[in-house]
Length: 534
Image (cartoon, rainbow, N blue to C red; front, side, top):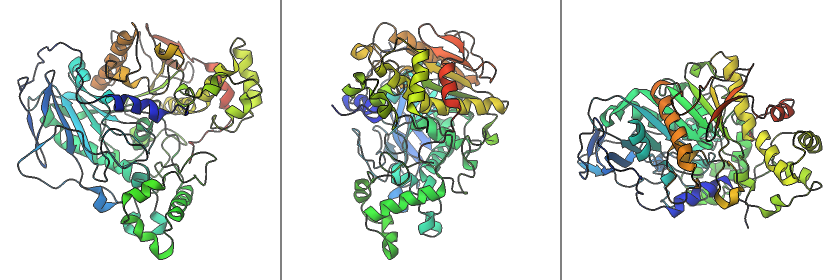
C-alpha cells in the first residue's frame, strides 16, 4: 500500500466528485439577491461580461479570467487579461497550473482563473469577501475541489466566496534570476505575484458581485496558509486583504536565493539545458518541465525539488516570520490553526507505521521530524509524558509536534511579541472514518470550515460531523465579517499571549485551553527551526 499523503487525501475528494453537488440546504430567500432562481446571472467585470448559474439561490461564476495566458510569459510576472466583447460563459472551472499530479480538471499554463460564489449582484450590499487559497504545498492543487465549493458558506453567512488557481512548482517558483536578464528577475515568486493579481482583481471587481473590497479575508490550508504567511511580508500585497486565517500552513522562512539557484541548476541539468541553451527553458513544451519535477533536491535530504517563495530582494525583502512578525501586516487580524494529528495524513497509510517497534522508532523519526535533534532523547521524553502509548502512537505525536505545528507556534509567538497577537486553534475533533485511525489529520479542517461534509469523498462522518462544521464555519464567517472570531457557537476566544498561550480547541463542544501540549512544545523549543528547503 503506498504511503498516505496530503495530496492523496485532498485529491480523493476531488476525484470522486463530479458536477455541482447539492448543498443540502432547503432553498430560502436571501436578502439582496436580485437574480431569481433558475435564471443565468450576468456580471460585468472591468474586462468584460461573464455568465454564471444559480445553485440554491447562490450565483456561481466559475473560471473567470483574472490574468492573461502565462504560457506567453513563462517565469515572468502576470499581466491582467485583455478585454473581451460579448458575454463569456463562466460555468466550469478553469484550467489548473501544470503539475506532477493531476486532479480531475485540465492543466495548462493558461491557468489564471478564479471562481466567485455570491448571494447577490449589484445590490449595493458590502458583504465580507472570503478569498480561499488552495493547498498542495507550492507544487500541486487547484481551486476546483468540491470541498472548496462556496455555496454553503454564502448561505450561512451572507458572504462572497472566491477561490483561485495560480502558477505552481517550477512555473511559479523556479528561481532563474542568476541565469538570465530582467525577464527572469521575478521568476522565484511569480506564483505569489499571481495571487497578488487575483487580489487586485477582487479589489477592482468584487463590488459587482455584492462584495466589499475593503473587507477581504484570505484563508487557506496547508500550502495555501503558507502562501498567505508569505504575502503578509510582500510589499506588493499590502492593502489587498484585511483579515488572514491559516490552516495547517506556515511559512517561517522562505527559500534563500543561493539554495534556490542550486535547485534551478539541478532542474536545468536534468533538462540538459546548460550554457547557451538555458534560455530554451522559456519555450520548451511544458510537459518536459513536468517530467523533471521529481529531480532530487540538492539541498534537502529527502524528496524532489522543493519549490517555494524566494528571498529575492524584489517581491520578497524579508522572511515571512523571521526574525519577527512582519510589521507590514501587524494590523491585520489573524487566525493560526493546526490539527491534532497532522502527520497521520502523511504517514497513516503505511501499515508499517502501526506496527513499528521501539527499536525501529528512531529510524522512522529521523526523516520525518524536520528538525535536528536526537530521536532517542525525544522518545525518552515522550515516554515519560505518555507511558501508556505505543511506539506507533508516539511516531504520529512526535512528527506532528516537530513539523508544521512547530511553525504555527513560532508564528503565534512572533505575533504575540509584536503586540498584535493572533487567535490560535487546534482541531481535536477526530473523524470516526476508517475506525478513527486518522484522528484529526492534516486537511480535515477544510470540509468543516466550508461546511461541505456532504460532498462526495468528504472524510467527516458520524453524528458530530455537522455540529463540528457548524461551529467552525460560523466562526470563520464571523471572523471574516468583523475581524473577531467570537460568536455564539464557541466560548470566549482570547488571542494568544506568551504568558498563557490561549488556544481554541475545536471539538464538540469546543473549549479554550492554555498551552495545550505545552510539554511537547518545550521538548522542541531548544532546537532551531527553519522551513524545510530554506
